[in-house]
Amino acid sequence: MRKGALAVLLGILLLSGCNAKEVIKAPGVKVDTPALRTLKQQAHIETCPTTAAGKATDGLPDVTLPCLGGGPSVNLARLRGPLVVNFWAQSCGPCRKELPEYQAFSRTYAGKVGVLGIDWQDTQPDLAIGFARETGATYPQLTDVSGLARLRPPALPQLYLIDAAGKVVFREAIQVTSEQQLEHLVATHLGVSR
Image 1: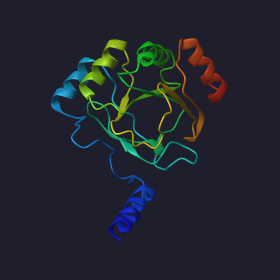
Image 2 (image 1 turned 60 degrees about the vertical axis):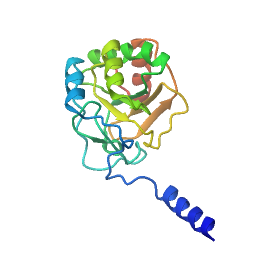
Image 3 (image 1 turned 90 degrees about the vertical axis):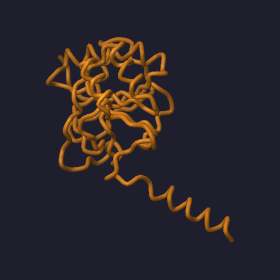
Image 4 (image 1 turned 180 degrees about the vertical axis):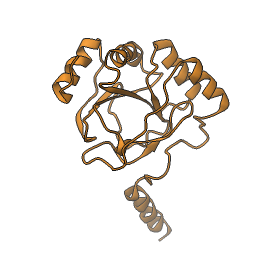
């Protein structure tokens, strides 16, 4: 009887999902401390974006993630594009190679297409900020230390393209190898070019 009650309780918890009003973080992992804010400032990482008032249909999940190294938290379902979102982790070799391409794209398309990084399932925010600094990635960075954004990338790196209505129009586990490759994807799926 006890095992049955426990199974029912676990089932309810799994089906209820995450409370969208909560900021998702792993217990014991702090992503906003004075030391992390200093590291973020030294790395010249931009502040996280503000979001739209309403939730998008066919958009990212309705979860709020903290800004890596401090700053405003962001509800993913309220993001609007044109926006490029890349999932990465400091333990991901291909991510190290591609983050400079996202940075180059971010500079070229400033004011036309936003770029947002999400450090995924990484419980060492100081190393993640160091990784962003080493790769020159100064565009805004969120963190999903517990991997609960319900996106569950099958592999890293992962690329999402979000249109002006907040709809996910492209999603793929792909390593971006050049700024031109990213430009082509954005032109094809978001209709934005230089």
